[in-house]
Image (cartoon, rainbow, N blue to C red; front, top):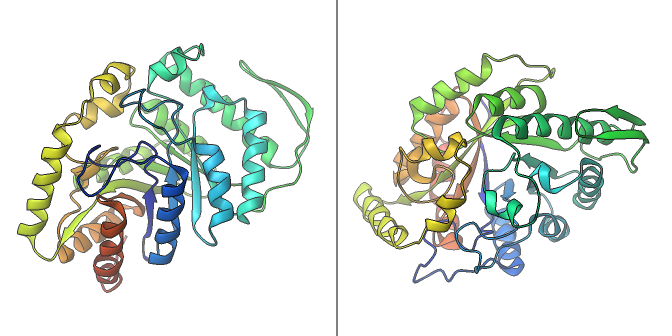
Length: 349
């Protein structure tokens, strides 16, 4: 098994852990995103994810970084790192999105990918006057949407008649640099999400969970029908707290957890669509960070965190999308202390 890929979440909401940290002012600016991704590239990280929201789901009065303009700018500001932009199909017509993606693919020299998210935060759509479809219908919509996008990425003339989209004799240029097309990531914890991933995605994106839960999830996904020739790959989100000793790591975890408890999550939880499986599952694993955060257990000594990463590689995870706080110094610590330890381990998948 080759070494895993490491990526970072761009802090589009301001921070990835506690919203208010004494050593990390809340900052959702493009300037900060650029600084962090350039540091990540320097530290050996090879991918990054930019989540998508129109308004900040934690509080509408807080700043929220816009995904697609940021992705285009970061493509120009970087040299080697993969840039993944999340997209909610209900917000973009597939023709418009396909063209935007082709342009960022060109700017980046083939380093661009998308993360297909079928939406879970109702207010940003409802306030915009965009119908929020029922859960399974959103996935039917997403299925048709990504079919149109990938057809347009092929460079062929597209004629498509579906339930939601009708495309007539349309061809987009230039063709993508990434072949056969920009990589498609897709996450979700419902059967509808897992089925769509097997049909349409290159990488299935898991929220952070304990090892056995991740093992079971991967097995569940793999048993479904796959319509693409290449096998589905797996990525996982996690919040990292690594220190020289277990005691130091645990103390930092308790400190961040107390800070996190001070965050007001009322607006976010009120806005979650009731059928979204992700939030039902995340409630089982309280901790620090979003999308599972510390539930993956990457909290401990440098050796412990490296060994746990190796364990996840062993069950099929090949990409780790990571969060830190304070972001820059903890990302550097991970690069200097944990990455070399993982490289020294014999990884078996």
